[in-house]
Image 1: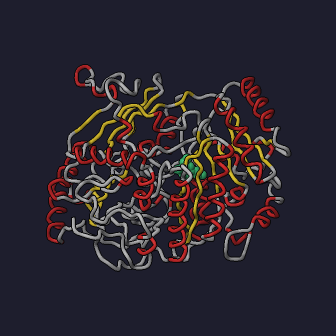
Image 2: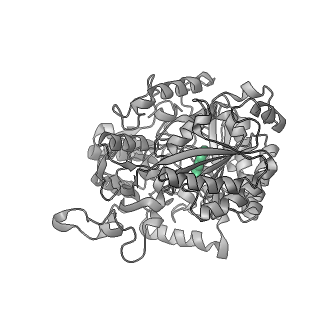
Image 3: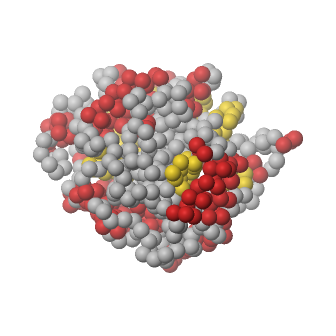
Length: 606
Ligand code: EUG
């Protein structure tokens, strides 16, 4: 919400709050982050309410009044107040807290809060009537990828989470649940603890996100069930015309009007498996989703360190067979040593007081003082099962990694209580935390942006992507923070570009860096699995095999399902007919031009 709170809410107080067990951590994290802030909480709006495209103020006011009639006055709020970037747990639903263009550019005209699937359908029908674009969010914590911000300025954000945040069911025998968009990892975890069920959830690095939203954006977690979309089972979807659809076994009505008893048991059901087209798309609003849970088990987290930067391809070669054999039980992370400095939560200035990226030899000197000592790469893994099984697995893993000279092995008990490994151990056993927020202390007014290409789990390929990252981060003067999420055949090579959102120069450089990273990775054959909304067109454009066959296919589906083009136009690079070819696509340096008073705007009328 656009109201900065003094004390962030707990999950008991508000659906998007933090669990009480993390009270101290949340307070510490927020206080520390805000201590680096030099920007004011908010500034007066320069441009007034940003109206939907080609919509007069009169039509807008009439439309808003009509929607208020339908949902209640309090559930449709015009976005005319000052914009507040807030903090992770008090993030805005009106714009991108980590704005890469001007704060006021990618903004909502209003926010609507549906209380049910029926009301969501009503909003969609309303949008069709007035030709106003919608931007649905679950919780809006898609941070580093655009947060809550709409791609088309002046869209109406449909904030589903505010009033649709129920855990609709937990089936302990089937090890599954059904959630609404506003259920966070924190909330689902706490509920399972309260009911004392022997089940785990799978969460990403930060626990405040939406279980449903992350899965349909194809996010990743770190237990053996870390592929979130692969572990969802059944959806309820409001289509862009307002019609309702249930996928999977949910398409077969249950007895006496009940939900189908196998809806959360079998994913594909009968006929084309359509769930995929509702992930990373703008073909509908998912109002309910089934998710499989994991049965609780023994677990042991651990860490390997590798001494030399040049060990990187050898580490990748060593990981591949371990992952393909499923000896690595989860999605482990391989990080560069520089991350050991920034997960301490200390600002960059603590380590290096000059401008420009922190030099490699400075990182090396500081790493000597860390509990793990001097090294270049760190591997965070977790093994699962009973003790004997875990020990056997660890023997195999140690034997494999010992092929790299100077490798060291650590267990959590070998490291101090405040070391990051203890937080990693929680995430890898399904306990959602906040620790990763400490990255953002690196710079004052820190914002971040993810570059997220997929590379094969092969040393040669990973080295190409890594070299590109090194070269281009140097060129644009940014620190490089690589984190690799490892599977047997591919790795999500994530770099977190941290920029100061008070600096137009940093914004322009971050934009230019991102554009060049996307283009040069694609030239080598590597593409992103997900991206910030400002790069959606460019990334979609790199998937252009066969004369752009994939985008044409998506546009065909889009036009069939959304003839009026009201559902999240531009999301993931898919524009409805109404907008296509009218200058909305961002393919050049429009982002950089929009920093400092420009705007992301169409070149012609719709
Ligand atoms: C991370 C991982 C992601 C992502 C963004 C961030 C990890 C950060 C695997 O996907 O999209 C530590």
